[in-house]
Image 1 (spheres, helix red, strand yellow):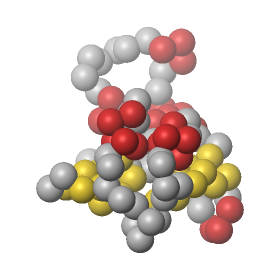
Image 2 (cartoon, helix red, strand yellow):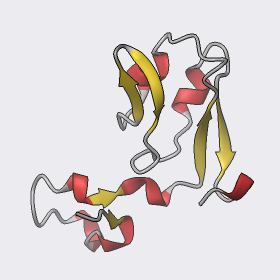
Image 3 (cartoon, helix red, strand yellow):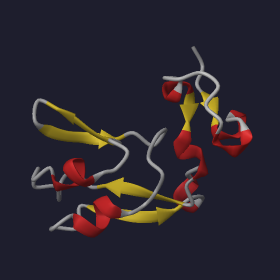
Length: 97
């Protein structure tokens, strides 16, 4: 099933169908996005624990990427990374959407 854009969400925050959050790509409204550097990452998982959207992908106890479909670009992961393995980029930089 193709996920819907945030533009398809009903105005006013009305929840017409409970449990439908997986249908919407809420990350579409971000103005900045996190760029993760695998080589710099020390796998402390601080980004994962502090991400309010659960957008930091973890497999077998290690960060493996960021789910940009749901990341809203708040920058908490970048602010909290002790080795600056995550930096925030403006949407549209480097050919990003």
